Amino acid sequence: MMEHWKEASDTKLVLAVARFEQDALAEIYRRHGGAMLALARRVLNSPGLAEEVVQEIFIKLWRDPTRYDPERGSLRSFLLAAAHSKSVDIVRSESARKAREEREARLAVISKDDVDREIVELSNSETVRAALNNLAETERRPIELAYFHGLTYKEVSVVLEQPEGTIKSRIRSGLKRLSVSLAEVEI
Image (cartoon, rainbow, N blue to C red):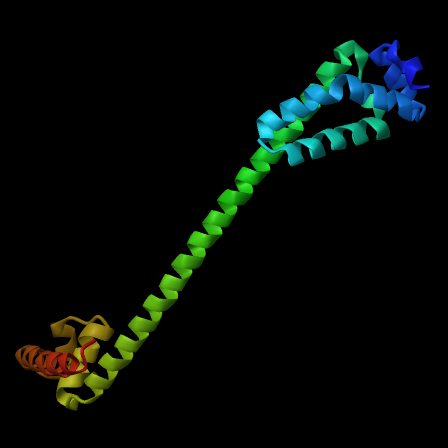
């Protein structure tokens, strides 16, 4: 029965495929499968993926042979275009997947670094807070208002109802004590 199709045109073969004649599909594969496979291998650089591409195209042809329009070109051109298109899609998809994985890996590293940095900063801030709590109220309060609330020396002096010079002195002496205290714990 296969011999019958060797002399048939590609268009007749596609019409036979539409009637679910498997031998016609086998003849189309014999004629064009090798070229499709070679093209897909060149694009994909993978014999296994190339075989999958060719198989998928022949399955589509079997399921819907009407996709081929002889008015638009030869069956060989149609099949090669389909193999090329599918192969390029796979390359693009694989490239996008790799880029996405690399981006996610970089973000994971950045996130881990951010977490590590956050832990160090939290630890440091707790150490600073403990050292600050060891200062006398007269030094601690002006430092808190100036550094943690962002007030100027003048604004701190108004809030605490003390002269600006006194506030500057207390902040300066408090920062010196804080510096000594923090140097002892080595943050």
